[in-house]
Amino acid sequence: MIFGRKKRSIVRLLVVEDEPLVAFDTEHVLSEQDYEIVATVDRVAHAVAILDEADDIHLVLADIALADGSGIEVAQAAARRGVPVMFVTGNCPGDAEALAVACLSKPYAPRDLIAAIEAIEAAREGKTTRRLPNGFRLFAGSDPSAGGAAAIG
Image (cartoon, rainbow, N blue to C red):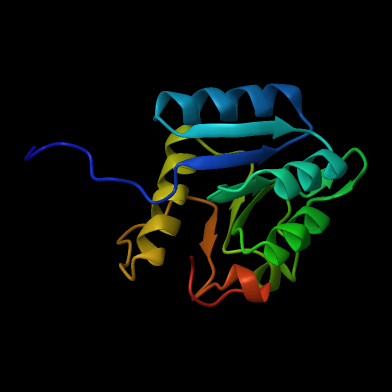
């Protein structure tokens, strides 16, 4: 197929968001783009439990402010399992680069969410993205298994 979609390396996502409308919208946008949502949860404890159980999560989208703690705790748990995290938050923490591969500021347009995931995927493949979405920071060279930002993937 000449004009077919290329095979993605990021397909299975865990969404960690405690605002129901944002969670619903995120899930809808991603599903429409053929991403598989492993789960959408609103608590740190639930996210960590899913990370413990699921074998094949490609990316965690985590808000920072959650009902029972912080998305930072989710990022730490994901890093121990080698799963990259993109913070999706109104206020990206100062130490985000040590914990995540990227940060997307809220509010964001649906196209910016998709473009952010595609930029992470391109970085994993060693490619550069010409134009990053508004409010998005891709941390140079992320290694989630090291808990920091150096070879995305």
